Length: 101
Image (cartoon, rainbow, N blue to C red; front, side, top):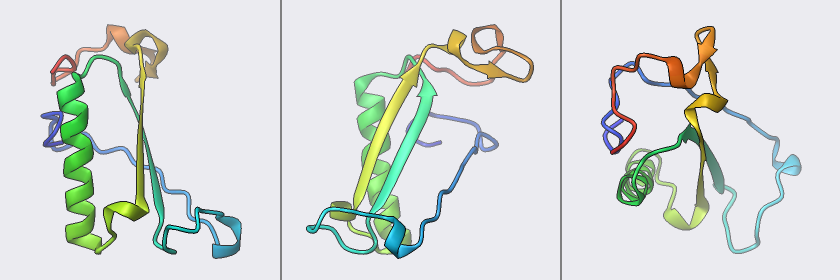
């Protein structure tokens, strides 16, 4: 929310928990290895996305103790017209925040 200047209520999360024997990860990572995949509207600047990644790495370490070596973050951007939200295409939504930052 801080990096993209989103309103407090913009929280959408899904968690996929795996048993230890179901998750294969590189040998140079610990058993705290975490993959974070973000699906966002297209339009944020490179600076805003880098800021998001850096804030996430910092906050994750602060709140969980998981170090950056054990975190992988990917951002996938999709044009707003490729989203269907609240019964309409995303590019027809009236948003209460800016996407082009």
